[in-house]
Each structure stands twice: as C-alpha cells, then as structure tokens.
Image (cartoon, rainbow, N blue to C red; front, side, top):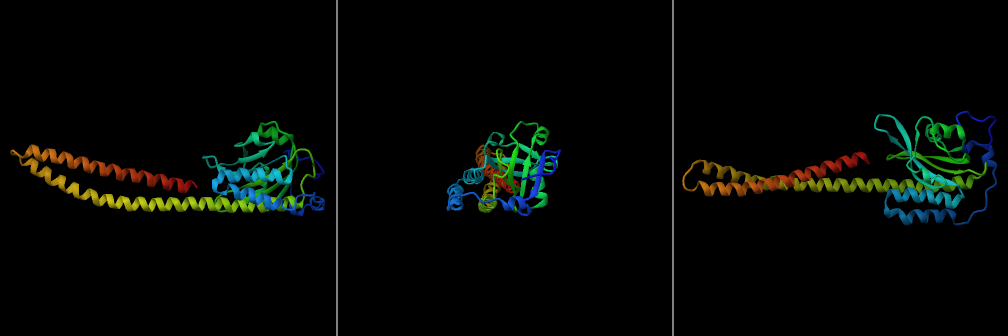
Length: 273
C-alpha cells in the first residue's frame, strides 16, 4: 500500500476492492483447507457462547492469514449519547489492548463503517499519539465492516512488518469467516431472546395463578377479622386464625413480587441485548 504523502492524522485508508496495488498482489501459498479449518474452529466453539466465538474469530484470522494481530471492534454508546468502538476480541500483538476503545468519528473503524466497504489501511505514530498509546505502526491492514440487526463494528487483521502482507485470498477468507461468525452471534442473540420470552410467559402464567391463590386466603382473612371484631370468647381464636391467614397471604405476595422482579430483569436484559 503506497501513499503520495503521509496523512497527518496517522490514518491512511483506501477502498480495498478498488485498490489496484492490492488487487495486483500475488496470492501467497496457503493450505487448500484453510477456509474449512477456520470454519471448523468457529463451529467447535459455537455452543460456548458469543464471547468465545468472537475471540476464536480473531484467533482464526491470525492463524490462517499470518497476521500479526486481528480483532473485532464493536460500536457502543458511552451512556452520554456519544459513540465509540471497543476492542471486544483481539489476538496476536495487539492482545494487550483488549477492551480498549477508539472514537467513532475519528478512527479507521469509523471510516470503514461510513464507507460501508472493506478498507486497506495503515496507522502510524500520529494516530497512536492521539489515542495516547505506544504501539507498532500498522504497515498493512484489512478492515471489514461487520454489522447486522444486533451490532455494528469491524473485523480487522494487521501486519506490522510488511506493506503488502495480505492478498485477495486473505480478504476472501476473512469475509467468509466473518459472515459465519455474524450468523453465529445472531443465532446466539435470537436464542437469548426466545429464552427470555419463554421465561416471561412462564412468569406471567405463574403470577396469574398466584393472584387466584391469594384471593381465597384474603377473603378468609377478611371474614375472620370481621368475626374477631365482634368480641366474645371466640375472639382470641379468630385472631390466631387471622394471623395464620395473613402469613399465607404474605408468602403468596412475596412470591408474586419475586416473579415481577424476575420479569422486569428479563425485559431489561432483552432490551440490552
């Protein structure tokens, strides 16, 4: 990747599929089953959860392309309305920066999402100075926009040593495994939603049943208190009976409130997902 002049921001990006220099690169020899092996690695951890799939995606990118580092940056809201990218999975030389963040509107990842096209990119010292970190320059890198209904972000692989480390076959492999992982994450989120809805429906049915159960002891408690207020020798007996009925009502209400808390928690988790 060449540039007429270094960008003062420390970021240089080009649309990968339109970059003639990139398209002219001679593909490096790679095992015939590299794509299949990468898929198998992802499939093997599919059942272990979203985070494991994301990390294995980064691991597979390093292993199959020879990248010095690879990772996933996902877009997140900082809580004050501003956006940033978080490095949620990283393998290789940048692994120490996992959970690090970069700005949404001043970063290679942000440009990649704005263009919605795979990018060939470099990062040099001025940008690292802006982030306040010390890291090896990225001589050659691939950025792929990675987004669906659940998330937005980028999947990237970089080289610190070579200005022409990657070729079209590397891009094809990275795109393929990224799409596979995207579907895996979508399945994970969808499955979470289904379980949450099932739990909510079960809680609602149980709450309805408890509401009916409360009615009988509550009616009995009302009657018993009325009899106790009449006075007479039986008053002590009625008061004792009312105490027992009140304890039963209290326990049923406690269970009903517990169900409500669980349902509220499930709804909050669903919205967060």
